[in-house]
Image 1 (cartoon, rainbow, N blue to C red):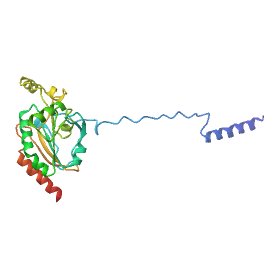
Image 2 (tube, rainbow, N blue to C red):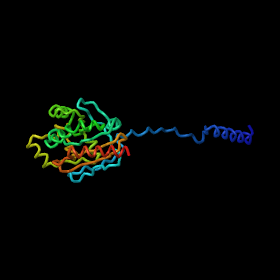
Image 3 (cartoon, rainbow, N blue to C red):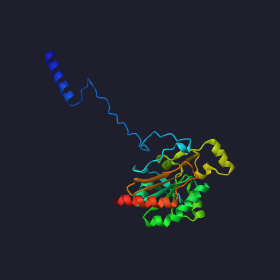
Length: 237
């Protein structure tokens, strides 16, 4: 074959192959598909450090959205807090546990105001690190009709800015009184919430907040009722 003609044929063939994406001179690399990263269980991978003193917590204030978490009922089933918020206006009671006499007294006081709060349209949700089995004991001991929920991993207490880590000296002192935080929660984190009361509307917005690092000081029922009525008045206005 004429060398010039052969060269022209080679040029034409190469151009055709290149146009179809099959250029033998520059083979394409195989396509690599990168699988998506696994979804995170939380909105942020960084968690704020837990204060070592109750006085250093930074509780959420009114006007912001109430965080949600999956908590356990006394029967061990789980429920998302956002689902409960949507049902009706909610009063959240954060308490340390059924082993705390001050908490038990406060839960009893809340029970005395329960009928008035229900008449206003509220539900009461009392939350502690206690595991579900311990919640049952508190309900039976005090004959409580409102809901007690287990936040054993203190996920909700953390996001509300109420969690603090109990120091070793206090842990040892508790043990002298036969108080075992690990046994109560089923976890060994030794984290407690600062006692607090929140009022959440059905849109999931915090309307009232009260907390005190002094666990002996609790919101009185009459003040809670006044705050509950005021929150309803604000919603209607």
